[in-house]
Length: 454
Image (cartoon, rainbow, N blue to C red; front, side, top):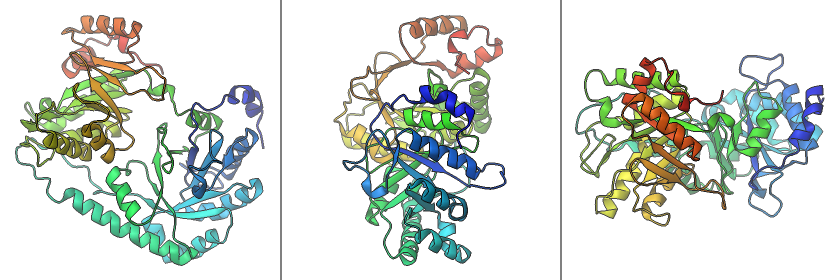
């Protein structure tokens, strides 16, 4: 089933992965004939044949973290039980490769799918595990520019709902298969540290969060799954193996103080302006300043609340395709307990990719631990002088990446400053939102240093 293109690319694809953690791949609906958003059985067969031909060994979830896993280990996952039974199981048998099939709450409770789940359970190549699809409300919360937003009960209600749903899924799969599932998968955007603790309380020790972009490297029993898109060919699998996508780097971001959203007029219109700036300038990141101990722009009980801005703003930007959401933690207040409480509430409110800690914080401090307890996939960064920061290295031995928001006050000067920083090796460079809007108005000619690869 190899195509001529596959043959031509084999020398390039022999490059070993840059990490030793098992690769995780998740396929959605498989359909024949092809339908929008679905992969065909032929595409899946080509993917499996490619992996097998290049020495990748498919592992079961129970093997994760063991001596048999390593840089050529892959965990296969399929998210649509009906098409998995019809099209995927024969391919797993052909290639002698095990896989997990994830089952969402609606699928678990649908009586019409019982024969499908029983058929999957009967295959020695399939392991059924529950999938978390939604932990919050369906609607996106609106921006609020007023004091006194109450956080009471939000997190508890969401986790209670997740616990009930997941417990029902576990019980149903145990009834069908005769054994309790050992793992759980999260649909993109639903994974969090508190959700992990709910899963652990139900005995689900293998954690499989799913990402639509290049996934982070996680240590077992966590395995990051790359959601293979319907258009994907072998290059998507190679990129997932490298855990790097050239569209993600360098990072050019717009910096927004949450208070700017509520300066005047319609706050939703100001959010739309930021989204438009990001789109027009081709930026792939945003840096959000969420307030401080004297008053915050996210729901918390640890400080006065000026409004609920940070979470809705980050969700709007993620929805617009922004890859990197950077959030600065409030400056230290002198009360470590209060600072940790603020960090926890901030990262419950926003699914951030980068958390910029105050300069005085250190990796062993509770502040960083608090962030990662809520958002395990987040990377930590530390403030430097001015608006600069440095990130933790992506891997041991690598140089710490550096970032900053330019300090210049005109578009031309900001562009020149950014150009100097880029030449000096700064990969993460940002513009204040006012300068970014001015750059849009100047026809973009003065912002060449912010151009990203296409």
